[in-house]
Image (cartoon, rainbow, N blue to C red; front, side, top):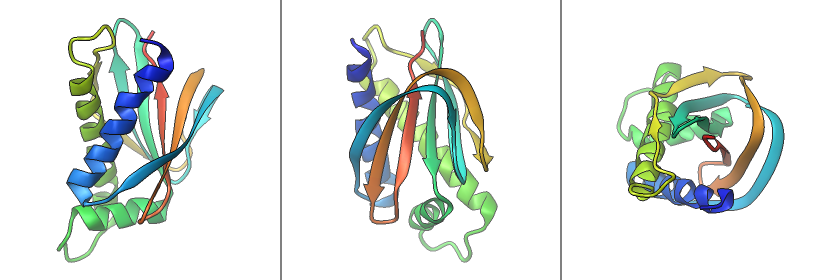
Length: 150
């Protein structure tokens, strides 16, 4: 599977996860290849992917998008605090990785993944050629960053 075909299950997994967890439609609007170190903005949820080598999946949210997403997921929670926002972002990344893993099961691109870590503020990841998929949704924009395991 070429690297662009490898991205498609993650895009599908992202859209499905948000639909199921938050009743939210998200649309992929732009896909880029970016060389170098990825730096994220307000809040990012990161998982390490393993498949013979090491790669990464990260969801990068502006704070208003992360907060609105948490409110949708935790429908009925009295007050959404910072910890809940971080936990929701991590769980969304975890479910996206699980959905993508299921879609790639039985292929040479099948992978395992770590527990998510959530970073508030800029975080730097390894240098590499990253796929960056920008999404739009009714609660705001966000990005999916992927570094294919090698």
